Length: 562
RNA sequence: GCCCCUAUAGUUCAAUGGAUAGAACAGGAGACUUCUAAGCUCUUGAUGUAGGUUCGAUUCCUACUGGGGGCACCA
Image 1 (cartoon, rainbow, N blue to C red):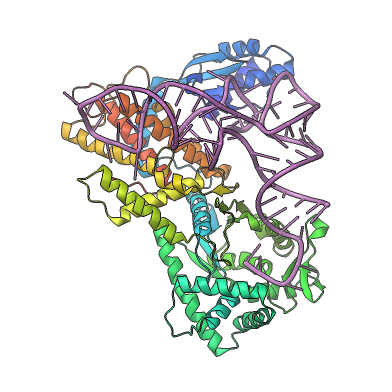
Image 2: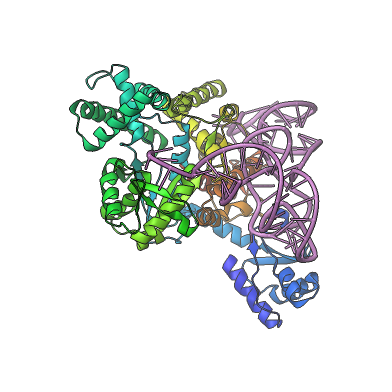
């Protein structure tokens, strides 16, 4: 529709002898300003030195009754052209939503393209905290938005199973007297890491020992350490797998620093011009590109994050086949490194650098300050989810005595609350976790969307009993306000991906749900005596479909009842 | 010290250079014998400071102030 309007306006400009120019066509934020608005007259007026409203009137006169599905054009405000869609248009779109079902909202922007999305990237031996839940939520949503755009998406997780943090954890385990055949779980590993990391910072002998362990892990040179390492790694990965399942992520492939490390070292050593030796280390001189120097191989000859990431780009292509685009989503602590890294990759593998994109999203902050797994000041991901799930369970039991909810449903609601809170704002900004708000489930929230969906399922049930089925024969003259929202879904989905802003979709779905709840309060939907009931039911079903598909793109499930 | 990001109601977030800066929570008021009250209706309340560009600035530019991140062997 936007393209149709753009073309029509351009034709009108030519016809009137006005200059062709860049202008916008948008959905006005206020529904009373029509369905589409254009600033064309104001832009042209500036160029031509005429009054904006005068130009707007001329363009209006040229366009009126010329565009299919546009029934009214008004000049408003400082010179906006407001377009009002015809009744038929809304009916047509409602029909489409019901026909397309799970495909409703999809578009072709990335059709046929293979896109690799890397996200979550937790480190084995460390705790999976709410920061990882945040990064997983963002990455999952980006991945799904690419799927909505027709891309073939490969989800990838890159886990740091070697490195100083692992050595710290192993040192901590040794200090705690834990051996490879002892009982071991994620909690103990977290404690061991905190202990080792603190020792590494405060105790020089420990620091020396940890460096030795680190080297031994890379070289697999010590049988006791190997055994403890293998056990700890397996325990950690199994624990992560449970969390991914809970969060609704299924990775296509896993990459590990232990495999990227040797490859990275190889690449660095075979490009001495790009990574010259300096003070015993191999570095990349970012200053030449307005960046800063970063170490790729430390003076012990061990690859750093940068060298590993360099190899990772290549490994992805080798294992997943040639791809068209690669997204790496991490917290923005990495952003500055990634700029240097991307520059280095562009010298080694120019074609890979060109199609690699880094999204440095914000981090989770607590009112009490920054989280740190070293000091144990973290909110454990699973604990957080179950605390909110408990609250959801209580709420269900209190509000619907005849309903027997299970803990799986409570978890789905908890995850919806967390994911909504994560994605409701711009992902590039830090988010402050307001636990009280996450526990309230009221107002703008994941459960609000779920509730609205479940409510519609209940209406459908009632309608079936009343013998009302969705029809389009009898339609009221004026469209309901909710109809002016439903049809925008696809363009929001496309725009949320194009701008890498899942929150656009969150905002839209919230508006949609709110619009429906107002509609629900004003209109009887499943009333067999109402001539418009079949159409109202069709609208309700279209809203449900839109909510379901939209929530899917955010990684939020839509339960049938809650 | 240098570089990057950032600043909107009491709080958490919106607003492709445009129309009266929107929601939600918290605060105040209300409706309901009805398809789920996790709902609906009404209401109080905000663009960090100082300049600049523009017909028009929350949005772009400059400075300042506050917050976050980075600046050589952690990730």
